[in-house]
Image 1 (cartoon, helix red, strand yellow):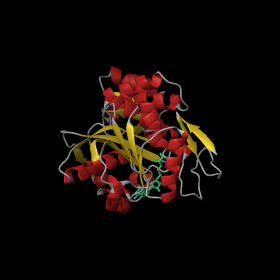
Image 2: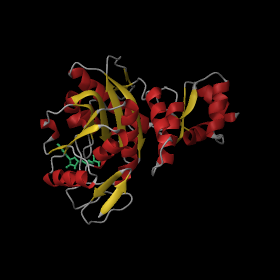
Image 3: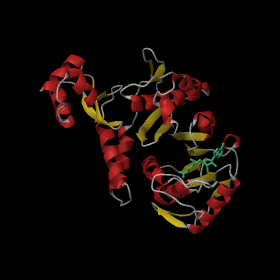
Image 4: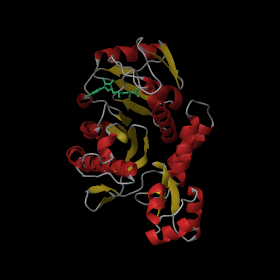
Length: 329
Ligand SMILES: C[S@@+](CC[C@H](N)C(=O)[O-])C[C@H]1O[C@@H](n2cnc3c(N)ncnc32)[C@H](O)[C@@H]1O
């Protein structure tokens, strides 16, 4: 079976693929639900002008093939599964592309690249240090263990990410800040510093792009929990460039991707967000339209915006009593 995703053609073994789930019962993994993740990856690579990309967990090779075709980078492919190694070779041929393909455990790799992409099953934690070692400048990380990152199990979160978080009303952003904290700590252990360029959540995963640079480490302690990243979660210049590139092309998921970029560009850099449903019950007041609430807060001189992490979320530096005033209009 041959599929088209972005500008890549991908040959898959003949097994059912649903729109949501990965192709199961095969050692060659392809998840159509990660299409937007890969589209954003090609846009960010183009915005960053990435010359070399290490697709460390390549599976079918779809991500790296799209990065070659859509971002113009050179790609080294790697997957520890033998079947995946042959599938990548076949898919490169299908797309008339030549590239190096490796069949190693990621932690045994020696090939560095400007951007190293970590996209394993579940948690990326065991691979972060190696990724930071192999990366010449940028690191991209996908985490699908969102239950832990979003606070379902503080003990597991501590064992995995070195900080404890509980469920809060702004869990998705908290998870993003935990991931950034861990990447920053792993970098620090290697004598490096990192800056998040874009960290976001979609469905079942968190994805972060980081730059290794001479930047500040911004970490704060959250009461009753532990340390998290307290700095910015995105770099607006990069997002603007990625959005411009996106606008010039047609692709499946374009609407979703551009809305995400626009929201991220608008987002204020406060920590956390309020859920308007929760506020509505707290203030015993009907919720105003989110945009109206944002504008009222801005008129009162506060920072306020919607958030990429929740359709019902509002970010602001206004204290609760002012928020209540703005809520009631
Ligand atoms: C989630 S899939 C990657 C999906 C792919 N990046 C994409 O966008 O379609 C994870 C892949 O990592 C491979 N893998 C898992 N552990 C690995 C390791 N330690 N070293 C290298 N590859 C590994 C698996 O065989 C699998 O193909």
